[in-house]
Length: 505
Image (cartoon, rainbow, N blue to C red; front, side, top):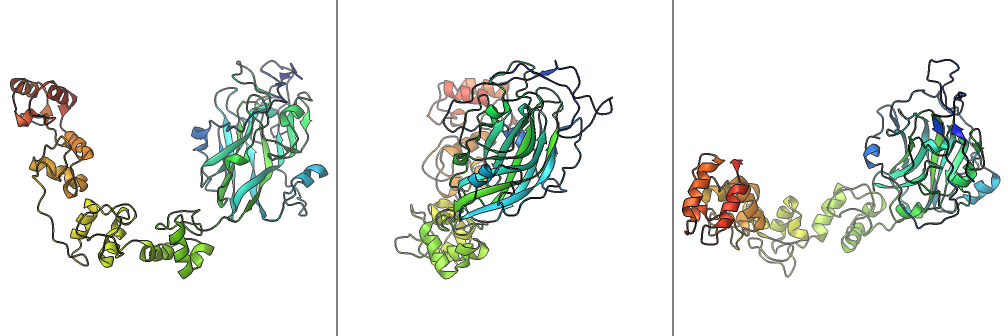
């Protein structure tokens, strides 16, 4: 059912007949500036979809130094503080104004938790189109639940013109988010001066994937002064109002940590507020092993991501799987799980293709510097670390790799390259190039920092060097053979032109 009703206009703060505040702003007789648009597409169903392109705007919503709510934008009218509301403690979600059927619908099963966040003023957008304003409020989930379902409830939500608003939920630790509603009544690619449904909010509203109530269809039943009843609504797609699923955006994550409610106002003229909000999470306790962070780095969750290591550590220290994987657990993991001194590992003073090495003390010392040596491969860099540790490793240092064999600007199998100065400069940045092999990354680094195109050594690659190179064309001149193919030719000319300008060294 479409409505052609026009949106009333706020009188600016300080003007005549003005009353600032959510849900009570006076409306002028002029109804041409912000026309209402109702979208009749309520019955279509679409697959679950994320409807959020607010990454840039959301990044500014850091918690305030004065509390967990933050407003972004320049409201024309600041609403008065939200009225306090008495919440029925017998209802887990505090849905004092919800119909009984709705409250029963979201009754929490065993294994669920409910968490509460503070209310805030919803600032008005600074302009009719283009620049939204946001407010964020945060709560902390203190139970390790693997998310299976959730209900978001906003208590005492008051705002005129529902088509201005978006409601988004973000799990800060994982970065996952879901848009539960975006600008009711606003079609896709709306024409200018189109602002969505003009109905109002004044009550307690909840969102759950299994709800039957349709916010878009309910809003379309009334006009500008219509107040949408408090209820539990299903999440709706932007542009159509079709039912979408929000739970899949969070399914399987550990719910621990900060959750952020982000409400956006996308058009000037209407502001609002809410008294509080809550998040009811249904889930199961996650298994502590093979589900959380690295076994070799402390993190706030119990357990770690390598099953055998996690189980071995927790058999020694149960708190690592019951409370959190802290520094003590990491120390125990390094002692228990790393392949140091085990059969099949090679000498610590030689590179091998397997993790770890045969001397447990040296292996532990090196892996405390570079965990890669014990989790991926004991390569030339690991050997170099071992050589730098006379105790406990006792390795003889390798011969000086600079100068070595091979062209500095081309990859080759051995360590080092034939220009002593360039070789030393590259290996000071990437020791692998002198410890293991001069690979493509080493050659690229040499081309960047060694300035091989500077044939006359004046610190800049310019016309003088170009002239020198032209004199070598067709001859095997190593100084100008940048690609090391045995002859100076067009590819070396292209190399020099690509290096044009001052040297970096």
